[in-house]
Length: 325
Ligand code: CO
Image (cartoon, rainbow, N blue to C red; front, side):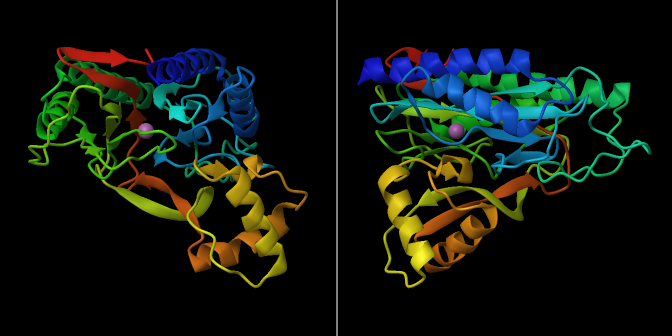
């Protein structure tokens, strides 16, 4: 078991580092996520969830639909959140980068970004030096928050102490932690196994104990520090097999319950000959009946920029082992 956790961590860590180097302005998000996921699966590992690519004010839960037109623009602050799975044991890790390169494919002749599902800023995306400074500082705030938490994680640390460390570090940069997002415990075939690791001091005296597997993920924002749902859905989870009448939905649910049972998935991961519009139409009754849970895209409520840093760790007597270092 430990070996599988370590292997899943090492694969995710390697791909995360390569992805952070590869991303560049003008690149299509769908090509980027396809590449990341194939780097993971070609090792023989599975995906613990679809690679999340969340640009600027989007905090989490965006991944590309199959024919995504979204491209990265110069100056974007991009959260790359990915995970690998070996025999049901998982890793979950994220890094945030500011995109470099030329802006040519991102804007029309008036300097406006094209309308893309993965972006909220369809206005002028040209960033100033002050914007860039803020984005690099957000990244530093979230990564330092994670580093400071990792220095105190050991058997007996309370969730409140972790949350306080996140908040203190992020506020020392003049930013706000996102309190509606949290880290989480991991178990075999279970990405969110019950314990939430807060990004603010929530008063919890619950103590992590030796052997716990947890993903810790501080989010820093220049905005409200609370997320709101964008009613768009690209990531789904299988919940149960409720009887369904619509024949296309029935076939789709059978397929998903067989192949995507344990981990969140995107349309790209469902092996089906359905085209996009048939897929969306067949999914609707499954979501309505509660057989499939749709994860809404999350943005900062005040449209602040967002940075996230995440590692998976195993709690030890006198510290922790970071599997995704
Ligand atoms: Co996570």
